[in-house]
Amino acid sequence: MLSKNQIKLITSLKQKKYRQQHGFFVVEGIKTINELLQSYFELHALYTTETFNIDAKREVLISKTDLKRISFLTTPNTALAIFKIPESKPIYEKGLIVALDALRDPGNLGTIIRLCDWFGIKDLVCSHETVDCFNPKVIQASMGSISRVNISYVNLEKFLKDQTIPVFGAFMTGENVYQKILSENGVLVMGNEANGISKNIETIITEKISIPRFGEVQATESLNVATATAVLLSEFRRGS
Amino acid sequence: MLSKNQIKLITSLKQKKYRQQHGFFVVEGIKTINELLQSYFELHALYTTETFNIDAKREVLISKTDLKRISFLTTPNTALAIFKIPESKPIYEKGLIVALDALRDPGNLGTIIRLCDWFGIKDLVCSHETVDCFNPKVIQASMGSISRVNISYVNLEKFLKDQTIPVFGAFMTGENVYQKILSENGVLVMGNEANGISKNIETIITEKISIPRFGEVQATESLNVATATAVLLSEFRRGS
Image 1 (cartoon, chains in turn blue, red):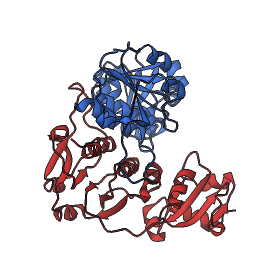
Image 2 (cartoon, one colour):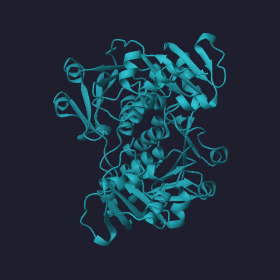
Image 3 (cartoon, rainbow over the protein chains, first blue to last red):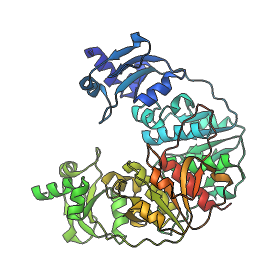
């Protein structure tokens, strides 16, 4: 059985202000929960219809009806967990860093976290205007990768100005990325879904790059930011 | 004012069987509607809160409240259009074709249509188990690209068996795509989100390819199918 207070806490965690107030975030789905259980993330409570055989104090067996009541999904999984939001770690500042300038869509952020994990990017740096990485839809799309990528929210303008390594930015009119020699150290900045990289950040970019379009003149005017990130990270990693 | 019959027709188009029965699909958002108005797609009706200055017979000015009633979106745009589902065109069978084996997520299909458009892929061939490309969420994610990519639903096994060009497939254990010479003619098969390429299709694949993982051993076990498609299409197009 779930108490009213438990339900109230869980549903409040849909909103960033309550996540920050309580220091918790919600994870749904056995696979992602198991991945986070094996990471440095600390479990606060696990509400599940089937036992995970973990520390019994943290596990609460609930009915499917109760799960439906607390789940953020239209089709709930079999478990919902609350984890503590970990303290942010310092930025490593070696190798390639991905930076996001006011990314708004949680699905895109989740996909980019998963891409960073795949391509071995240790640090993902987000402007304060970027969607919160503990948003349930971000967690859903990142599929456990959130425990393996260090995500920091910073004043992006200041962060980039402080860098001595090249700062790459994805622009529609940048240099053809396929013909460009890409350095091993650098920051790759990706812009907002509708407006791209903002004016004040643009002035700090040292290398404007672009993915050439192969379609007809009438073709789509831009790639989705997550798929563009996929192509660019692949280019950085593949070697020339 | 909207009639009860109009509302009933529009809301029925959420479902594939009614789209097929009526031969219509729904498009929301001024930008995508405008793109489709300029394509060979035929408009059936346009419900809008502000005039588009097009053929008046097809345009119905409605209130925001009415738009909210018919919209499939949580936050409705300012217009909703009904277009006729066009007759499918024959498959061109030259250059690179993308084939989807039971792709289920409409967002992924929409993103892949947009990628095909960007990378100049003329033909997208889908197994009958793949989500319907006129699903409103697919249209939403494809952002007008649906008018520039020829999408066919086929018996994928038969289609691939009939090919004389190389059939590439994305597998976790395929050859490193960065080290592989990719032909200009071919079919690139992408698999289902959860299960990858099915067994019966796997036997027809002549070239298994893979995107290497650069993260730690514990890294994410797979890329999202849309981002994997982005990386692979980029590899086919970039030249060696």
